[in-house]
Image 1 (cartoon, rainbow, N blue to C red):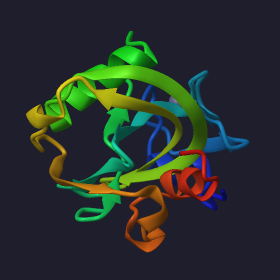
Image 2: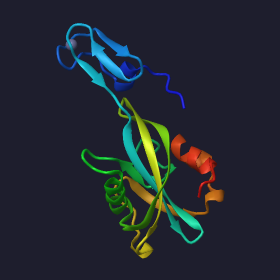
Image 3: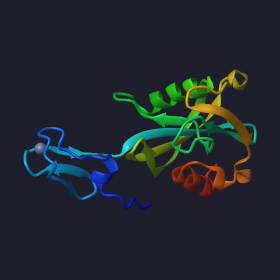
Image 4: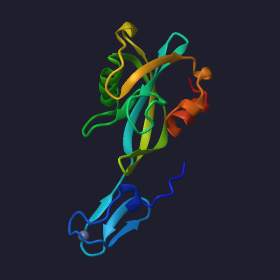
Length: 175
Ligand SMILES: [Zn+2]
């Protein structure tokens, strides 16, 4: 995966947040520093979680209610909040988006992703899990999700999938 923007473009910064100088320089791909004061900002990858919820021989994919990639298919999940574990974030997101409680949660794999949102580009580490729902009949799309589908992994058209990280995991036939 390639991101051709430098970090100043990615973060969409014009001025140093500390001294307002425009003398910002990128330090490799990971940090911005200011030439006129001691300010330095590292942008480490954002942690995100996603899950393939199994229901018989199918999995649940969601339809994104908002940009980026509004209307495209996605795995349910989202960003990890401050002070949360991956597992806590996963259970919270799935309750918010699908009103489901997960069981048999197992780590599957991870993949990098690029997420553009309102002029800022976030580089993420997407952590994928598999799970089942305790009571699948409780499913109800909400929050960042406007709909869901049940589909066999082999039947998924990658062109309808929102993000490269999800496409790359599907391509590995891990499910
Ligand atoms: Zn400065």
